[in-house]
Length: 293
Image 1 (tube, one colour):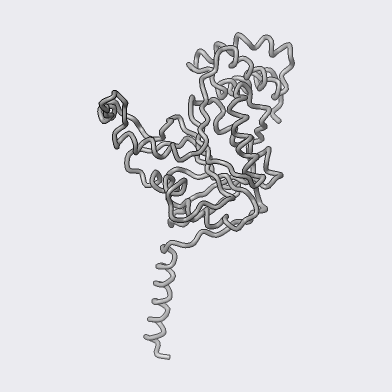
Image 2: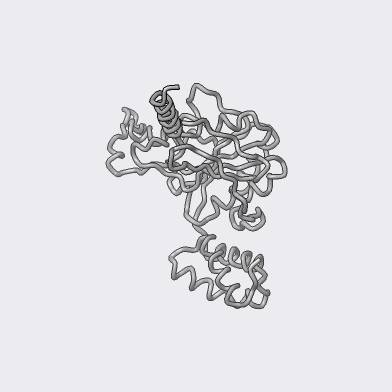
């Protein structure tokens, strides 16, 4: 073979290899037996991969206090899902630190033995959601695609991708995939005072939202189940503090003495949320010699 031609072939193969490395690649299925939860991540070359979560937070439904009504709705919907009955995509909204994402994790642990699995996605990657649905469609497990702290700014591409997959895409949703999302915004998009001017009044005084408002409402309306969370009262906060102190192994006598400190802790942070209660309990337990489990 002509040396020049052989050299040309080598260079051509190298060039093809480089081109293939930057071309979009189909999402590969992971080892589904390696974990009960995965994270979807984009590599530097733009290719997506499902990474197993080796250590899932050991959150139990019984750990979550003062949100019984919300818990009942989410557990019922998730149970319907894993049993192969109709269930809804879920939007959990409301005050920060009130247990929205913790409830989703607790449901995963509660129903994992029945085949429930979770895939966590960032909102920036939601344009790849159809690829994930395609990968898991033939699996016997039930998958929750989980988007934590979800909100969009104007024009973000993930907004339309999520809207399409929830309801409106030509492709039918697979029966083994649901989307659970948490957000501090009820309608997932920023709302401005000027948009109230787009509301219209009919002759009989009925109020109709304008196109801008309708567009912002349309995404959240595609979630079949809305679950709202509210700030805790002082008594509710103290109940949650007691529960976490007990779970961490703090003696009853010390728990009684912790009440005043717990209130000061919340006052300093300007919040009586479940997250603040958990953080106080860990600090208190650590200062009183309780070993980490």
